[in-house]
Amino acid sequence: MIKPASKQNKRMGSNRSMRNEEQGSKMDNDLHELFLDELADVYNAEQQLTKALPKMAKAAESDELREAIEQHLEETEEHVSRLEQVSKQLGESLKRKTCKAMKGLIEEGEEILKEQKDTAALDAALIAAAQKVEHYEIASYGTLVAWAEQMGHDEAVDLLEETLEEEKSADDKLTSVAESIANQKAQAE
Ligand code: ZN
Ligand code: FE
Ligand code: FE
Image (cartoon, rainbow, N blue to C red; front, top):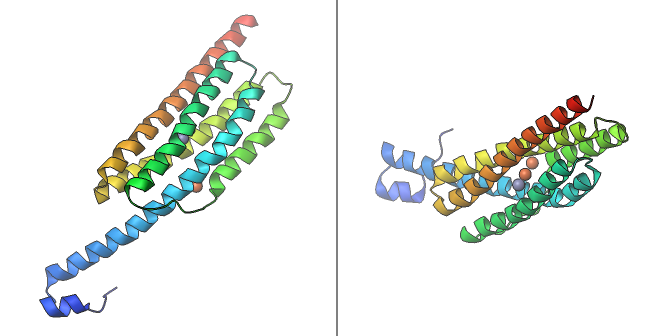
């Protein structure tokens, strides 16, 4: 789309590089808005999680799984405050938004938990639900880091990367807990 030349463009002469610059700053503004929307989305997702994780920890049969979930609950609370720090540094306030994806993931987790209650596969179901959540977060933070880098929001990059790494380790931890539970079950048979 060709935009009409701005006043500034007329004043300075509408050459090609000027037009590119203008398009560049429009891109920056649009990306910044998108970044803020995504920040608000993941902020709400993390808040939903601080309520869902205690229920998941309570439901876990294995101590190892319960402890892993409890540890990630503490990290999740930190993730919430890191997002507040990011918005503060940018001089922005976090918009109110509902992350529908996290809502759906949690609902599905509750459903599968109900179905697997009293079965030997309950912890496997919990781990599956938790890993879907972690993967959603990894995708969200990966995107936020890339956009923050692109816009030169260096402090935001550091904070978001810290969280991204913790989400990845939480995912890895869940994989190793799943393996250890499966091994214990195999030995008990
Ligand atoms: Zn998180
Ligand atoms: Fe979302
Ligand atoms: Fe997480």
